[in-house]
Image 1 (spheres, rainbow, N blue to C red):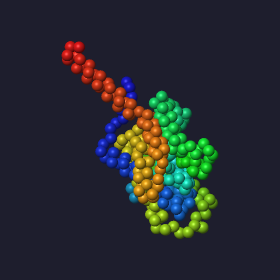
Image 2: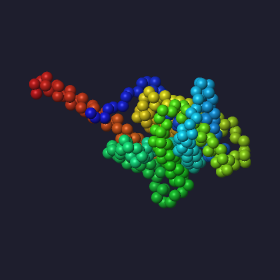
Image 3: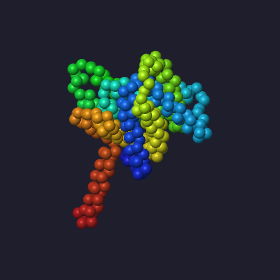
Image 4: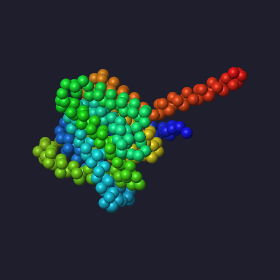
Length: 321
């Protein structure tokens, strides 16, 4: 039998997917606002600390308990490093030099790195021809987005763009490693990794940023921090795991198409950011790459061709052809 088409999504699933894209797209907007007064590591610490507190309180209120095994907490530690500490830090540092919209586009390379890493790190997710075509399109989109200035020397803007792409690579590794958490409650996994990230970030932020030397942030900055921690982290996690259970991982990949769009709209309408034509062209190439990796457009097309062929064959039989 051929590969089956992914299960369909309900109207509720689609609504949740759009909300999730807005929340994750909003993280680039909130980050850009908060970085006006906060340094990157300090912002990462505040994001994971507030989110960890909120999720721990939610677990306690629900009568749930965190696992106690040291092996499990070791997994949380590694997940916190590659799913939170490294990518959050790289993205926030990158956003001090590039726009939030551009950062969201570059971060959309995550599924491309996932496909490449899965080929080498997993026994059952090999790099097929459609996936290889998708990776090539995606990488072409990344190169087009970064632009020709990368050929004339690595300036700060290019390094910042590479940092955000590096965050996508870290997310990809975390996604593959996260399979080791199978059997652990998704809410416990999210809480555990955020708690571990907070513990790792405290000495790093204190040593590098020395936040006590900064002026007290204004209310706008604190509002952005709370939006980043509670909306783009806590609420987003809940919706993410809900969709993972009802729509499946393949359908959930569609959110990657929507995150840059929401971040672009927020950045352009509220922050007054501007992007070049090549940025939108690069996003289009990455979208084509993701479509090729996902495979559903090809599956739907071949299924329609097969049905049309069958209908024509039956019509020919009716006329005695």
